Length: 110
Image (cartoon, rainbow, N blue to C red):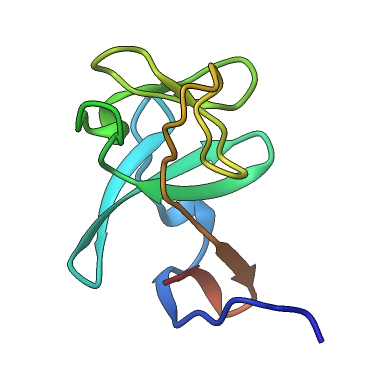
């Protein structure tokens, strides 16, 4: 038996086309009183905490780099959206949330 995480799933929208991403491909949403940053990547929608673990910058005010990492607007820390590690290996981890898309809409796991 695998040690699989259990999530409560919350619907965030009906389709990715309905989400109002900024020109930077990012948008802040609130789910269960938490600020979440939704990210539009070439690999689909990703979700992470809106607060940078390094200095508290707002991730939705950042950008996406050419490797599909999210970049904080304060000190340009880059974070991998698959596992949340900073790409320089300094030990910072950005909270990543799973996203599920199906015919009923887009859901975030918390």
